[in-house]
Length: 286
Image 1 (cartoon, rainbow, N blue to C red):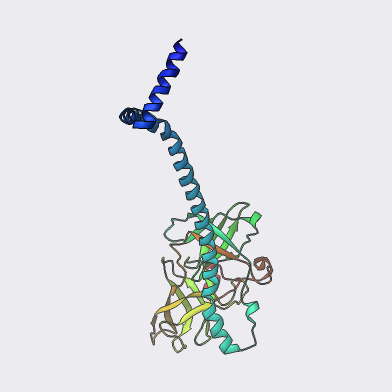
Image 2 (image 1 turned 90 degrees about the vertical axis):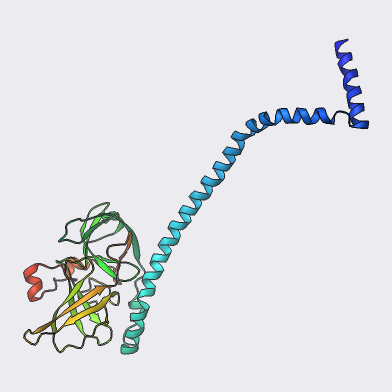
């Protein structure tokens, strides 16, 4: 009887609602009362969907950003050498092929630590001997030469920047072809050309590149530009200061470059020597 009563009431209510919409106010009241409950039940599902979409999108963007930064660093490094290759091709025509000047094998390394000694310019990298890194390997960034590896461990290595007082680098003036040695001045962003005669063909603004002598540094990489020249008739040599092209104090990633022959030249070649270099123990290329 109870079931029959409920069935009859249900049929009557459905008939009234179907023909005259008599229960619309009741339906609206019930929907209003139940809305907070429906919203509360749906909140965990909506929050889960939002979190999943946003976290997945952030992870994908971070991975894509990292890949693009690495590709940009490699491309900008190779692009920075095109100006020197163009000048060299004008001077030497077909004597030197561009295929021998551009190294295709590079490795991206990140900085782990920076030596805080004010009289030293050294950094630690997250690549070591297990990655093929060797003593004497060149470091570059998108704008030029940074330095060379001095110590290698299985998982990390230490590199000396070109501004370190113990570092020496064979260079060449792009405009005149003059060869010289650029030594670290110990300053954050300064090099000095040693033993430059007062009558040497150098000018403020001249671009300097690696000469490749000694085979430690690949030839043609930008080194810097001459900032100032002081000529004293009472001295045999001029004081030439150079501003490096590379961002020595701002890089977080660097490129480790293999020579064209991919030989570990540090064990095979004698050290480059000069009167000042031999006394101060500078690490020169080759």
